[in-house]
Image (cartoon, rainbow, N blue to C red):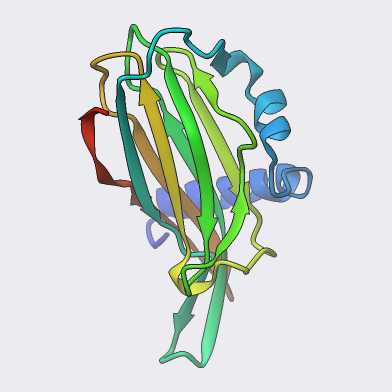
Length: 180
């Protein structure tokens, strides 16, 4: 929650940025990710992708408040960081699921590769409440060899009345990292 003066300033600044850039950042396709984050991408390695993993990332496009009588809607920014300094990270799937476990959106039509220390993002605007209160992402990744585990997080931003809220949900590994 944004209670302190610094916290309120930070939340207000973030909400203003989303108000300016949010309308242009609709649900992205793989072409959208490839165009928006072209500087973060590299060629898919030709070597065997012998290491793989997957992350589950809770996301909250809506949150029930006051025992379900009031609902606050949030924008969601999923960030996927290649934490390796030397190897590319191949993203095989970025999928968004709703509260009932139904896939709402698939953001990749084909695998993409992130340069070392680079990042890509997926943005779900506040107006897109298809995910509901139990939304989540699944990110499947691979690499040619031992690699630092990717950092995958969702940032939720929104407001209710005069209150502004921002919180982060960290991804959790759901597939054992190692050789296929």
